[in-house]
Length: 476
Ligand code: MSP
Image (cartoon, rainbow, N blue to C red):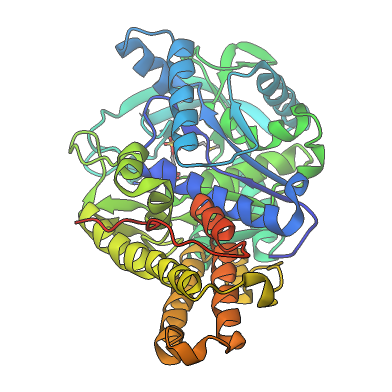
């Protein structure tokens, strides 16, 4: 990734029909890690990390009704649940956007009017299957046994209505595709980019940007009988936030949109087409991560196997939960998780690995009464090159793996040097290497496990060290 003096990273904004779970937590955590990394690198004021909730549309309208709430009551309630979940996971976002914010609504309306005035939108009739779960139209040929491939338990509705259409076919083939091929913006991982390219080449249909029968949303500015399609409304959040929040103008275009693979098409193609039609700069990178299954099964409310951030934090602590989630699979690929494998990994990597190393070194320094100030360990000012490059290339799990490797190397170093022996007391270089190693580990781990990293830093801030309770008590 090219190093600019600013970094703007976003997560999808989540629908308020559902509470936070490990899927939404995963993307948000990844965003937080990346934002923390760039804050350490570029300074706080040069990073903007945006999260939020997607509050309009048919699905939210329907779920609110089922629950006996108005849509805004539901949105108020669930957006708070998301804020609480992110607080629990120590996600330090810079702004939480809600699409019912009138400042956002105004920008959406203006942007769409601009696209209309430029001639990229035309009226038409849409007829076809619609999945409320996805909030999108499908082609008959895309359905599996007459069901949505992503929501097989939900009824598909067949809709025929007057809509306005973005001329996506032209835009995708003539404007979007050449930009992808020239690398004007990146779609990652590479395989996903190739899928997008071949899908465009197979032919694209124009996409509806308004809905006739939906009232919970932003009115279409030139035809108030229509409501702006929830996906168009939602995508514009990334842009609108930089316009209505004071001092954030310099952050557009976004450096990185993190999304799940299920919504890549919207971000990699439709969003770009809209921006091109509105004459705006395009985001630089769109990264799609994979999906979690739980014990080999799709995570779903009906199966009752949904894992929530709260459950993880209760069992593993905030930093334990963050560590386990981010190292659960290769960032960008699908992965299966289970609490059992989390337990094993917690004990191996955190209790026996990192936690044990830190106690071991602290104990040695304490017993030997080593004066840290005499060791000449300079302040750590940067990430290990391996960690930096892994994070910048969005290989978040590799970054963690590298640090863990370093932990075990340092453990081995202790075994070899046997610093507990009396005659080692004056071998300053050994003590120097141990303290420096621990400090580097803390620095490298800060974006991932911020509280634990701070604790380690404080503990090793000398001059004298005291051993403490284990950072990660073993789970039985
Ligand atoms: N509101 C839209 C996004 C609009 S962005 C302009 C939406 N919301 S959602 O609530 O359905 O969240 C979808 C996102 O949640 C996915 O893209 C993905 O990031 C995450 N995940 C949901 N389930 C997941 C898994 N089982 N595993 C990993 N991530 C998953 O779509």
